[in-house]
Length: 145
Image (tube, rainbow, N blue to C red):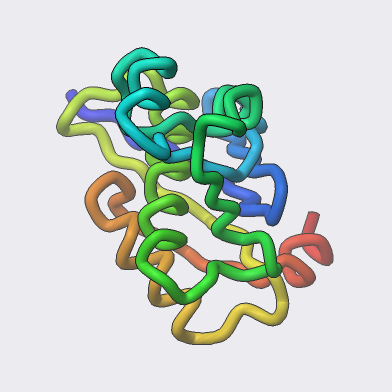
């Protein structure tokens, strides 16, 4: 039998937090580090990228991407890809026992200045791993706790 997970996401400029209906809460640094060259890739264990704190710890060998560094997702493909990797990783960590037929419903908080394009981008980059998305302006979320 499938299960439905409800999650809240605060997609922040420096930290992203996920809270689940199972009571789990995870916060990670909102960055991705891509290997600069083959030597850097070897140094980080053959991976193409590192996320969050691990990326920060190896930042000298990586090209760092802070996709929300200006308050909203920057409008370039690297930032969209990085945001997708961050969200997919933190949600997978928050719901470690998720089965393929389980559903994930998410409320994602975005800054007040996020425009329609930014909100549409979030929906597009999460469609493979979130079944339903509700985009909420952060001031609205704060007002309703």
